Length: 210
Image (tube, rainbow, N blue to C red; front, side, top):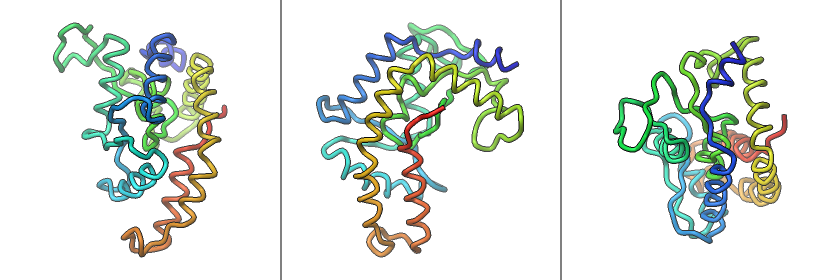
């Protein structure tokens, strides 16, 4: 079953992934003008503004937006880079895809480097959904997640290495910024909520090690 889940997953070819990954880096480095996206954070996106304020500090002049459906932009990236689309949408110039869903291999959906990163998104067979996601628990989930992530870590190792180098370069600046946050300045009701944000944002920018 684990082998089936990995083999039937549709991912972006390495050469195409390299081009798309370079484009994301150029946007966040200010070399290319285009919006970049993240998923909203917290219940009803209640913590999203904290992330956007941080990104104004980290990526000055870059337009970072919240995905309108939580997966619209990753879906568009996959359609562009694989030539597959879910069958219920306009099929012009694309191959039909049934019983698949968009999935993030390594999570980190509030990080603008990784939300649409071509090495982090795949079309996953829907039958494997019970063994993925943060709500999924159990031994089979653990075994599948480990094998699934390792398979794509190996496939995209050069691109993930570059991501890790970038994240290590950002860690100090992120910690410095989050350590200055105070509830009264952010409109958050409690210092505990700020602490939760600090922990969460550091997880979003963690290097990927398997």
